[in-house]
Image (cartoon, rainbow, N blue to C red):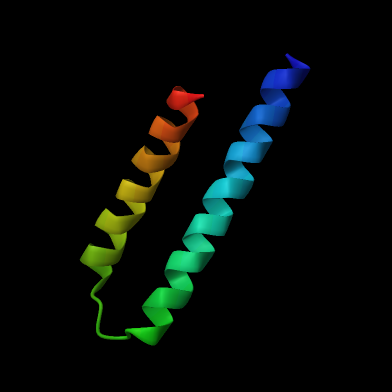
Length: 55
């Protein structure tokens, strides 16, 4: 149980990190539209999930 809690915390931190990196990219390209941003976020999420499954 505790291990699982730690793992999800790690996953959250990874997500925040990825989203932050992505967000700073968006700031550099202000003409990206919200829809694109949303789909990218979904891609990031699925990427993280597949990374977790690879472990």
